[in-house]
Image (cartoon, rainbow, N blue to C red; front, side, top):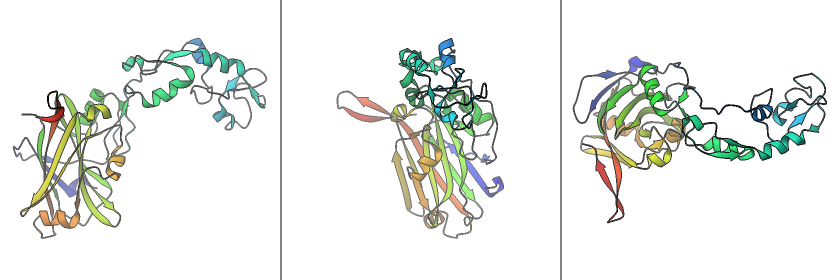
Length: 311
């Protein structure tokens, strides 16, 4: 969607301003944060496939000269050893498989803070779900491959994607589009809020839901799911004596933008209702979306969660 087709006028904490926000859907580059990979030991190096450089798991294959490779890559090299070009056959390297069973290695994200040590054969399962693993860039306007920790990604969103940054726990956005009949599968806007010392991504976009165009707003938490549950948010849109409201828990950016959108976990506005909120002239889309973020505070006496509102 071209940036000249939408005007996003944003006001924070109930105070209007005249800032016009535009988002480009072009891909942006940026260096990934350094990966926290544990230093290789000599034994660990032996367990690295020479073709894909991944750790090898049974069955580990070898040629007659003792060169090894993983079972996945064996099918790719047309049964020829990638080191000496001899025929591979079906020889298993049982000794190396036994050595791997005896190893205990730190999580490769140990430099990111993970203290865990695992047997070799269960290490990869942990790493695929490790809370310290890098996050994917949450920008939805392009397929961005940048990964990193949260401070790195916040800087990346600001500098590389030119995302608008705000401090505060309430917001008041006005979305304006000159031709509401043009609905594409494109993100209109991403805004990052810093609140309670955490960062949140507010998405607003238009897309096709079946044959019907809809508009959707939702919030994602820049952190893990367990931490996201400590917060709640509300969204409201309306005019002409009517309103729609949404209240929920922000989703972690571990869940992709598309996954959240396709699960309809947010405020969804049908086009006819959106045009009604815009004044009913059907010539221009004008939506004002307000909302707030609060932290759920455990009340030990009543054993219920009480909202702790940000002033």
